Image (cartoon, rainbow, N blue to C red; front, side):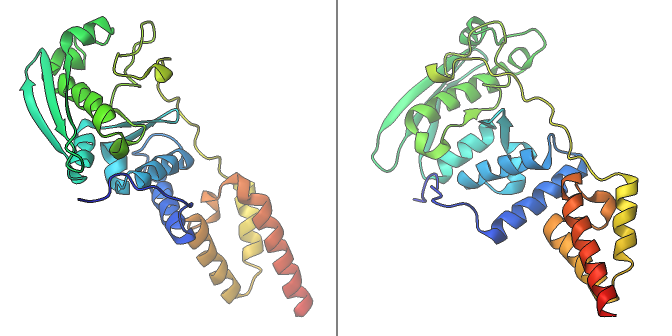
Amino acid sequence: MTTDISIYNSFPSSDELKNLQLIAMTAFKSGLYKGSAEAIIMTLLTARELNVGPMLALNGGVFNINGKVELSARLLGTLIRRSGHIIKVVESTAIKCTLQGIRTDNQDSTETSFTVEEAKKAGLFKIGGGWDKYPEDMCYARALSRLARRLFPDVIGNAYVEGEISGAPKDKPAPESLPEAESEIVEPEATIEPIKLVNGSQSHELLRLKMELKVEDRQSLDKWLKDNLNIDNFDQLPESQFEKILMSLRKKVENEKTTN
């Protein structure tokens, strides 16, 4: 049986972190993923601790809601089964789902259920919403989440199933399956402002200084920008990096003039 949830005693290595930053910046620039590159990095780091691949996490597997983690029901089940444990469907209908879980390391087992009636009492059921259109799938997801927290907490960490946090009603108590410590309703993740880039005049000044460098120094600069910031030109440079690079270029240009 494979190890359940890996415990990392250190931060990612510099090479691993660089790869994660590259993925996050690429995802951010694509416009296909919500939030800033920094927010995407946090999702990738969460996925890393759960032994989930970056693209599986970003493409509907892992959701970061104000620092709390939701997993899709499919990924939740995958993590449990990948760890060698067993999930059996005892009953699954449009009004109720009952699941049995069995740990293969110590043979502990339990059953959990979730019903449409519970969803209605918790204020989750809305005409035209997910609980109205796909009640069997929704019951399964909540029963699975309840089972995972009770029997497989070492596999899923502090994660919830998709919709437990982001879909909790604002004017009613959170679903019963949320622990008391987490009962306060968490608002859906606010839109995070994109990284602010340099303006036209700043980009032009950096380019002007760059063109005063020797060819080999310009090539070295291009490689550094690509390797460290994953950008191809100064128009893509975060404003927070402007002063640092400006001073470095001015110093380099001055040194070359003095040498010549």
